[in-house]
Image (tube, rainbow, N blue to C red; front, side, top):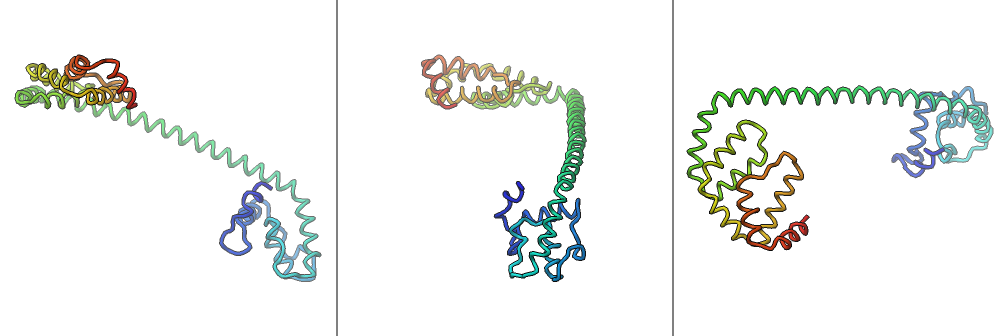
Amino acid sequence: MILDKFFVHLRTGEPGKYLASKVLDFYGRLFIGGPSVDEIPGPDKSVRQFLADTYFYIEVDRTPRKRNEAHEISALWVENLRQQEHPQIARAVFIASLLLCTALYSLTGVVGKSATEFREWRAERAQEKAAEEAKEYAVRRASVMKSLAEEVANFSAQQCLDEASKLRVRDTAEQRDRYKVIEQGCEDKRAELLALGQSWSIQQCADFGRSLEAQKKANPAVQFTWADNQIYHVGCMGAHDLGELRRLINAGN
């Protein structure tokens, strides 16, 4: 049998007890049932008890450690019974396997349905949460815009770049408003951003460009910002050889 060959060298820790024997014994007694001690003929009850206990074991476990002349008498009867029951074992295995597969298939359907329902619930909950946040923002929008404008007025060129970079995904009203305020407030920093991009080494520009491409690939919702354009598309590309810049970007991927 396949299980015999597969488990023949896997011991359970108890001398003489192979994992395959324990598995087959459990399965056989659960679905088939072996002969009792009294059903097995022979003069020695200890032999008959041993054969009854090891009826479903693999062959390496069926021979007693200590030689007993009465063993062959009882073992022959048990082996004949085992051969007669092979068809019954085959049917039992087929039926049990069929029932198990059916149960697993049904369970998979239930789990799959539950997972679909959970995803739908989560999507609905996300939409409801987004709607609630949009309503809350609409109420405080004016004060938020005023406070942000005052904050951006004191930004350096680097702060303008950093804050704009956080808004490459702008899929809410608050994010779009924030991006607009930062762009307007940093209008006088465009020349500084251009100069910053021109001052970068070609390797710094390649790293920046590679980061932009990786973000866009990971999330199609990513949009380049006006600051990205000043730093990279105008500054870096205007200061360095485009072929060499592209080669360095590809080399790092």
